[in-house]
Length: 83
Ligand SMILES: [Zn+2]
Image (cartoon, rainbow, N blue to C red; front, side):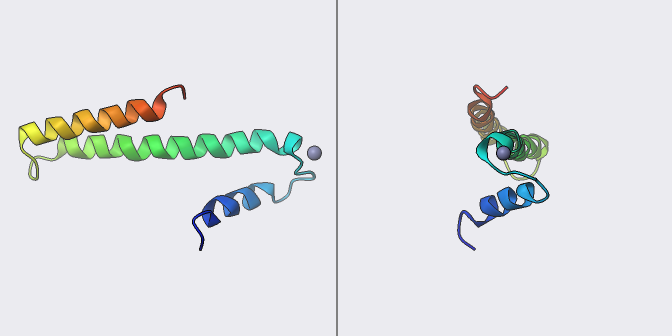
């Protein structure tokens, strides 16, 4: 599958059962698809922040703090202008 395959598949699935898929009719669905991908990205990073914070075996206190800081910056960048 090409890199774009999954995205094209999501669009095709979303178009199924729609009477008209012109840009005007499909725009709200596009917005929902984009929002869903954004939510997934936020969910993934949030889960990783939780995992790092709870990990008491693999990282030193300093390393965990650095990783948490880095992930928090990543989350903030993801959410910038998206809330
Ligand atoms: Zn239409």
